[in-house]
Length: 325
Image (cartoon, rainbow, N blue to C red; front, side, top):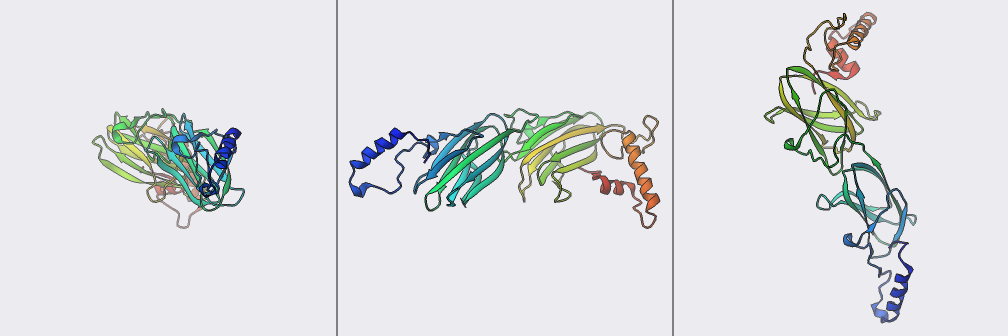
């Protein structure tokens, strides 16, 4: 029951009640059905606090729209310390529940959602509950059209090399597909950064056959995000990569990625530098590769007792760079 309901509605309800026999009166009945069902949901003003109460048998419904993929911070508190149920429904996906808190005294949650129409449902668990609700939204600023549904290989978004893209694993859009064309054999480097704990990935060839797959995770629980740089030597052709919410431990959030391709990946000299190739696997051979090699030899000179003699292994462990996606 919303606090902003029109007073005349209560007056009309009072007159109706006075004409009824005592046996027909139900305690805490909500005579104003506005907002009591999904079809009569009240419009929710985002980024503002909405207050209401839930008498016995009452439900409150709100509706809001997102015009672009967004990050939502949801806070719903019960000053009376009573229990209630909170649900968030996605109209575009058959009114499926994208977030739920059953029989709770408060909600403090973050959701990542696509553009579309959504409904909030509140119902008391036992006694009368009052609540304060605020949903704050922030644009995800994605690099792709918010209407893009790249949820299958046939709908994969074509991406270019040497371009950084921003995207999102959403609570209601859990997998993304991207495709790229490789004109010649090259070492392809995939740079990935994601603000969540884990993500599953798969790489497919031009026949849509799976080449490799795995899971990216934070290197440490203290890390604020996943940061990976992985490389593979690939033949010319079309490739598709998928990024998906981890199946065993679902996580959602924003991420960025880019692809680099180095065709002459075996070169040993560039601009007078001899770095033995693309050591840091960033898609180019330059002074940064030479710097890593100098660091490696400095390591050898100061760690003469059982040093790591495999430079590639040392580079992988120290810099998180390895020869695989």
